[in-house]
Image (cartoon, rainbow, N blue to C red; front, side):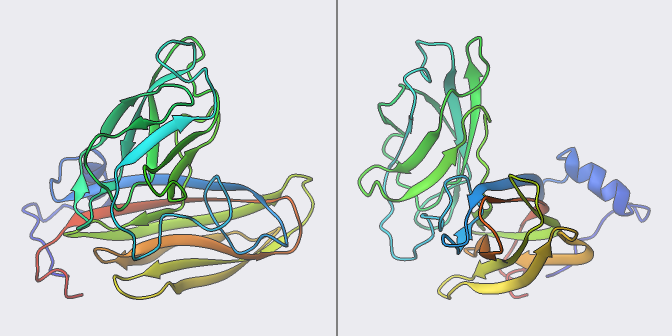
Length: 270
């Protein structure tokens, strides 16, 4: 990727990170994200790291883009009651992988609410914007395609006010560079455990490749840090998959820091 000229020669890494965190560099966007799968058993693997478990359902390559809808599993998540009222849905991509504006939706308890006429190919983040006196979503919120309802894009856990999904797609004209990626595991009983976990990437038109294949034990998590960058090009799908676990009732959590960088045609040849 071509280097970009920084006017100040003293623009060292700590200052660069601070300027990025303050959104002062218009060509780069910082992200800090966490993810969780709260229940993995020996017989359910492989499972991707997201709240619903099993394999993530928004990643097939031959879908037709559709409109989206969102609903709650509780009649209390609505503009008329005490729990979550409105939510913001983001990381929306159209059928050409263009990043689309975030959408604010007023919930109508268990009745699906449409995100209007725009069709989408990808989406994976929900955040509660407003709530009444309880300040959280009462139960699980589900974002899915309107017609093919088995295409579930996001599930927000109860009381969390935000989704926990370790999967994303790089938008058109973007590159994502990850400089920190941690993956940890535990068991509900607190007993020892082990697992095999892969970081998988699928460039456009390819299959999922294991970009990292790691083993985690009760004394050793996976930490990708101070190792330069993992770089993913536009239209690439990325996820974390738990390939196997030693014991039932295992949970996996993960967090990552990355930079989403605006690119040109020349930048894409990396």
